[in-house]
Image 1 (tube, rainbow, N blue to C red):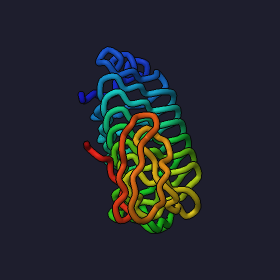
Image 2 (cartoon, rainbow, N blue to C red):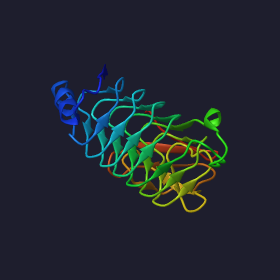
Image 3 (cartoon, rainbow, N blue to C red):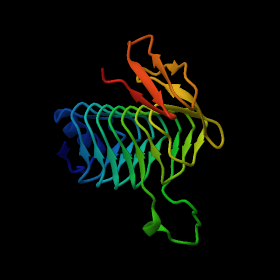
Image 4 (cartoon, rainbow, N blue to C red):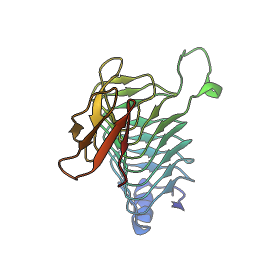
Length: 212
């Protein structure tokens, strides 16, 4: 990652970042101090605050906002109209669908300042957050979990879990490839991803990828 100051004109900012192997649209605002990795693309009307860290080979779609205390890993795809607020960490290979929502205050009031009450939210590697879903602050989304479109997540989501609905409920399991596995949510079992041949083992309601 490299730190880049925002020059006076947005077009100049885009030119500088393109030369350093990140591409920023002229309409985007990248505040001084923001760190953006090589190969990352920042599209129309994006605003990245000065304390943010964005990894390599990411894509930030139109009208994305990235707060100061945000960490985004490598190869993350953030679709249009997503705001990633302070205290959110997004690990490598995460997909944030169009207009999905993060929060950082659990009980907001306009008349009450709660900036010292932000709750941490962590999205683990390879997870998918479907279009228009809402992630209530203070939760962890497990690696390769899959949150369905429009779901409201108000508790931790296990690794590989498929969750849907309002509030979100666990209805199944997804492979790393993004295909549903023929397993129940409880008990024990095994399944093989038809696309990759990866074998998954369910033990006492916890799914793991068989390293063998």
